[in-house]
Image (cartoon, rainbow, N blue to C red; front, top):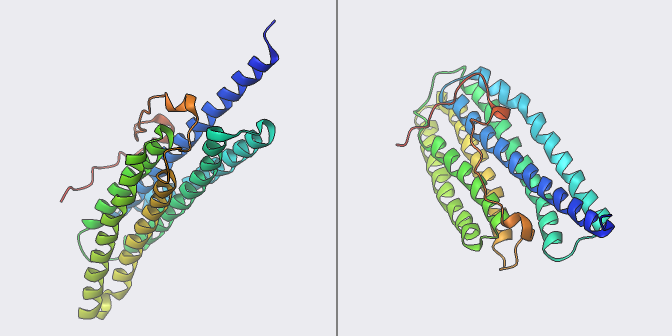
Length: 250
């Protein structure tokens, strides 16, 4: 007859593994939300923007479910050390991911407005910011699961590039407004999109700061041994009827 303690430990390990998988799943969904939100602006695709706004309910549902799982683990198992840090950091990460999901919704709302007007300028720096935001999501989750201090610090540094792009877009849109008052509405909305992306990257930086505070990081020993397979939009769980185009590189 199996030992009850061994049975409990095995169940506990499975619950920690499930928690890890759910956090990575949520991160993949939020990453896709950001990409498609910006795509809806660049391609002037209002229908895609509406789909992304509606899909935010899935992000919110995952946030609640993961929070409940973390609280249940804390209450039933009273973890300590690495397990405790893994679970409490998971609570924080999902909160940040939910906020980033909200930023994607805000971008879609501005896209719906901008798509009804003549395009003010080519969207070049906004997609660049989106690509950095997506990369920061993946790398912050990598740092979390792999206990990678160097990668966590890199995430923090990547935020500086986003700040520079945000400042550049602000200067460009301000120039439009000063030269032609009729552009004020569109320029303000473009600047808002840039600010939403900058704020989303600030959330990643907060996570990177947290992961990089010391050598003892927020991951369970068993989960660190799992190879991370970075999520891709081809995952059928997140597929939409329209294929997202590749952002311009220039």
